[in-house]
Length: 73
Image (tube, rainbow, N blue to C red; front, top):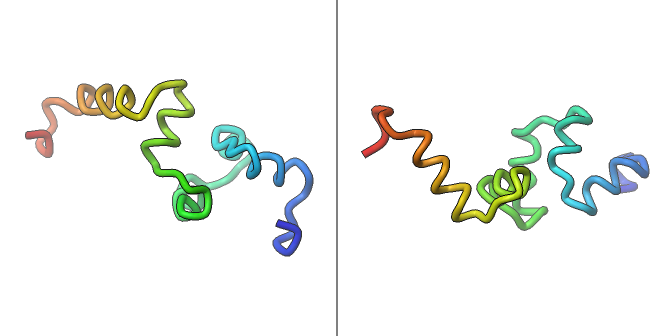
């Protein structure tokens, strides 16, 4: 993180996987998504974590919210 010039606050967000704080700080969700491999996480895990849910709960709620759309079978 030093090599990329992160300050102490930014390093702390990365260490804690504080994705919501990163977004509030101005990080791009696409950039965070591209870093999923380094964070050892997934979009579903991040979404669930930000909402205080398990991944299964998050997926169930998202599927329910998408019912009726053309891509939903």
